Amino acid sequence: MVARSSKTSPTRIAIACQGGGSQTAFAAGALKALVAGEAPGNYRIVGLSGTSGGAICAALAWCALALEKDRDAGRQRAAHMLDAFWQDNSAKLPSEWLWNQLTVTTRQLQDSGLLPSVSTSPYLPAVEGAVHLARLFAPRPEFLDLRQLLEKHLPLDEVKQETAALQLMVGAVGVRSGAFKAFDSRAGEIGIDALLASASLPWLGRATPIGEEIYWDGLFSQNPPLREFVADRPAADKPQEIWIVRINPQTRTSEPETSEDIHDRRNELAGNLSLNQEIRFIEQVNEWVHGKKLVSDDMKIIHIREITMGEDVSGELDYASKLDRAPAYIARLMAHGEARAAAELAKRKG
Image (tube, rainbow, N blue to C red; front, side, top):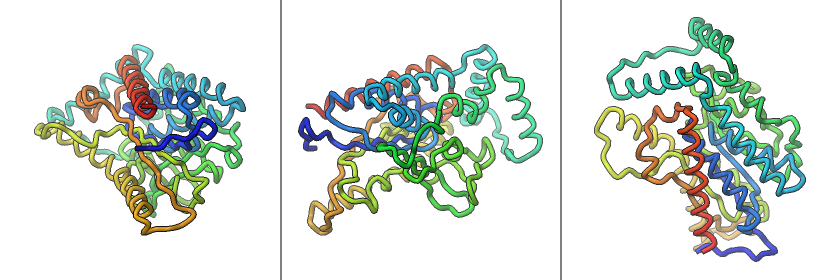
């Protein structure tokens, strides 16, 4: 059982958001509830991390909380920024509805084997030209251009990162080096490029260059970063609990038999691989500390909690749903995230 702090000493919390395309609207809803519940729940959010869509959700909440001197105002701004981003990321116009339906249906047919998959490279001039033309003639360019969407909703230049009390880490992987990278606000590394790096899927676009390296989606490394919250830090700087917003379900009740289900389950397991390794690292250290096999003033037990989708929701989602930007679908996932986070907060009080 997790010991709760006194009213004069709120529990230090870090929140880590897994990536998963449009499914991370669930993380946005969960963050809204977790940020809003901070004061009555007697906890303080001291760190946020994320990968891909989870990184974007975490960045929106972090930016809002870091920019407002008044914490209550920051909480309200975080909810507003999360809502505004996901509403803008949804298909609003008829042309966007058509684009979205075509994208999702094509992927479903490919995964089910009814339509052949065509492999291509985003580096081909023809592909780059088609993408450029689509963005050029789109009624809302930000619908097809993630950079424009992020620049519209994230005033990162206004945040004094190195001195901000709240920390943000964004996961990505170096394509050439193969090294994991957690872009860190304490090092002033959070920018639009870092978020694009974390969301750079190699089959959809070029790798994102930052410094001497180029980066792909953090799915291939840390999804999301956890150990940086606790490794090489004094005990006072570590969170007491880490809350993970998990997008990919860890378990399934039935065996996948269709090609679509097999592909979907493979993707879920791949997305959870690095996260489970990060969790095991922390749990192993907890065991050593509890058994007094590891004694140090810098060591303490870190409790881990998870916020996951209900099986009634996750069981209906396939890989193609990670590309779905239908407004009703996005709103449903956000509402589900809020409800699941609220339920976890109720358990914590109990």
